[in-house]
Amino acid sequence: MEILKHCAAKFITLVAVSLALLANATNATSSGCHFPAIYNFGDSNSDTGGLSAAFGQAGAPSGETYFHQPAGRYCDGRLVIDFIAKSVGLPYLSAYLDSVGSNFSHGANFATAGSTIRPQNTTLHQSGFSPISLNVQWYQYNDFHRRSQAFRSQGEVFKKILPAAETFSEGLYTFDIGQNDLTAGLFLNMSTNEVKAFVPDAIDQFNNIVKNIYSQGGRSFWIHNTGPVGCLPYVLERVMITAGEIDHVGCAGSINDVCQFYNTKLKEAAEQLRKDLPLAAITYVDVYSVKYDLISHASRYGFAHPLRACCGHGGKYNYNRNVGCGGKIKVNGTEVLIGKSCQNPSVVINWDGVHYTEAANRWIFDQIVDGSYSNPPNSLKMACRAS
Ligand SMILES: *[C@@H]1O[C@H](CO)[C@@H](O)[C@H](O)[C@H]1NC(C)=O
Ligand SMILES: *[C@@H]1O[C@H](CO)[C@@H](O)[C@H](O)[C@H]1NC(C)=O
Ligand SMILES: *[C@@H]1O[C@H](CO)[C@@H](O)[C@H](O)[C@H]1NC(C)=O
Ligand SMILES: *[C@@H]1O[C@H](CO)[C@@H](O)[C@H](O)[C@H]1NC(C)=O
Image 1: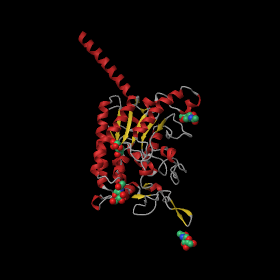
Image 2: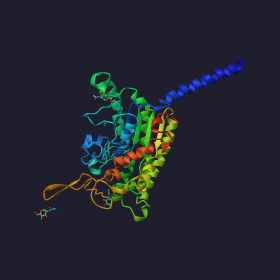
Image 3: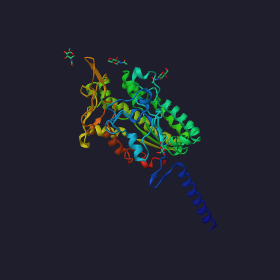
Image 4: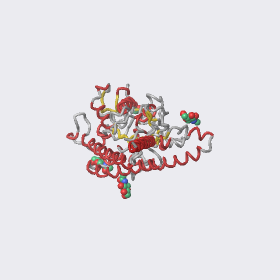
């Protein structure tokens, strides 16, 4: 009897401790997580105005479909990160670098178009890659974390535009970066093996940033892998690809293999991070498969010409490196717009040869939101739950 009682007491203590541990690792309720903020890191796939703030606005016709004016996005409308924010009940993210009109009370976006994980040794002007690589985004986040709290304590307007302290531990940390590390190598004429050789270094640097954020209290991580860049016009136009490397869809299979190699390493890294950071909920999201499915079965999903850019000029893919979307040329002294948008972007997947349209982004978001492509199979609403 005494032993039974002792056991029961022990069991109850155990249950209590387990529940406490669970509560510690997650802010999930049965109805889902409560994310008071999103902190995003990435490249143009999730840039809501960073590169535009620092290096000049992405011009018209970007933004035409949804914002009806340029809105810092390389897209006709919204990005996957916009649909993520909307879905968890938060406003669209302000870019950290945008000093006018920003409101960071529900998070900040550190992504810039052209960002890589590894710092590049070229200028934006030389290579088109952003100097705001992931380590720089981390410096900015770190500074933002510290200084936002110092200013917030002064009250007044600061309290209305800067995030509360708990947003840093309860917020959702989203990542979509890596694509440009691969293309940076390919555009330097590296072989696919040479590109693969630096992937472990990129993944190491990615890991370090996740660990740094964890050490500052971040717990919920939603990590997109990289898409099939071998299906994008700018890669198909710029990289030397032999006919034998083209797959049945028309994509450069050899380049998509490099993306898959990167993704395998990223997935392994996510598994290791789950062991190293026991209180973190780390959700790896296979965006590659969603995007490749969309491109390879475009007509099934209501889209046409999956490999042709909506906005651009000329060639097989309606993409011209020298005259991009919104591009003009001088004819007899007058500027003429030749990088025009297509009639109906809502049935086109590719916006400008590099980026997806709002319609495609919405479709991609709809596939990933319920956890169908997540590992572990967390939906967005449950992405605060440690496995
Ligand atoms: C930039 O240069 C440094 C020093 O030579 C090198 O370690 C690094 O790998 C280079 N980065 C890239 C992206 O090539
Ligand atoms: C920023 O957004 C928050 C939440 O939506 C709102 O309460 C606050 O008034 C906004 N700040 C300004 C200056 O508009
Ligand atoms: C890559 O190769 C192409 C074709 O040979 C060449 O035109 C281009 O200048 C090379 N690019 C670099 C960065 O070496
Ligand atoms: C440019 O001007 C010349 C001379 O007036 C004319 O012959 C030509 O057709 C013009 N080109 C275009 C594209 O308008």
